[in-house]
Image 1: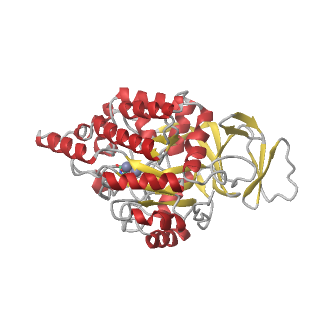
Image 2 (image 1 turned 45 degrees about the vertical axis):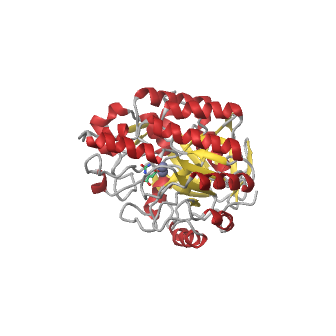
Image 3 (image 1 turned 60 degrees about the vertical axis):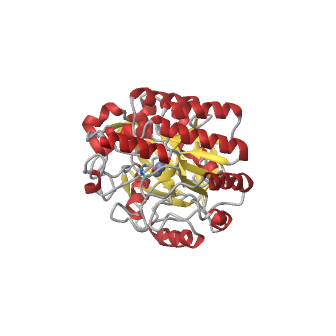
Length: 445
Ligand code: NCD
Ligand code: ZN
Ligand code: ZN
């Protein structure tokens, strides 16, 4: 196929070039490429061409939690939102903590994938000896939960954590962390609960910044001593970001992710949205939001992930203490970032690095995924910057459309999504009859 006349958005700048995809891979980039032998030509004049997004942080819920959502709906949503690769979290049922479970999960998901996918394994106290075997069957990275969240996977002891990061250094594999300190979260949760508070903002005070700060501090120290590759997910606080910035200056092997909702919402929004925006770690006050935005713009935070975390409607519509944490994000992930860029809050050219290239690099998928360059997979999102996106019930593919973004009108409109040379979305509609996604395993490099 040939994408003709578009402007390619890359970390280095925006360039006018045609893109030719042959047998699923980008075969040529340049001006006025010939259409000889091409099956399909997409006219991208006046449009922006981004690399397909690599969402490093999705919880699609299959197997075991399909009442919340499933892989079919989740990857259809991803496709419509311009995400062409998802890296699926391991807190499903059973949790992915043994090679056989990873293999079964991949076998289950493989025929349901509307976009390409890769899998995390989870590490806890009793499976650190399985790291090599999990990598051997195709895990692209590992997840460790330091604090309590959906799935209640217990944190490893300090000894296991040291071992995990020592092995990470040897094996060159990224360990992604839910970085909130378990004991501090318990302490503050008990404190705030016993005060009798029932307002939605109580969740923020039950998991204060110091819980993130302590976890981040511990991870930086462990990485400094072991060389282990630490990636801190869903960073939510100014304090966490300050520690990350110092560690980066020092050359510690650590990176950070945040999610669009920490850049979009603040604690001022609890009265309006209530438990719809309950998430771990919590959405905090405006100074935190501003510090995170600054960190993204300075490159201190180098990755964005959606933390797509769907739940059933009734699980979200409970009291502050009983409501589930997290909300679906994969479909609005790119549209929300694009809108921010078109409003001047982040640079347009920062998007490919934050949401495609760096996530692909951190999890061993680059250069196959994450860049518009010759030899990479032909994964593209083609956007009209002058169009609009209405987040409507009809557009959203989730089983439960319980999202604070419902009804939002965003700047920019996805015209086409291309997965390895197949047009899977055209004018905001999924046009592929059957799922075309494949399982991407860790490559030895
Ligand atoms: C996530 C989920 O529901 O799986 N929830 C959340 O609040 N972010 C788990 C997680 O990422 O912590
Ligand atoms: Zn988490
Ligand atoms: Zn998550």
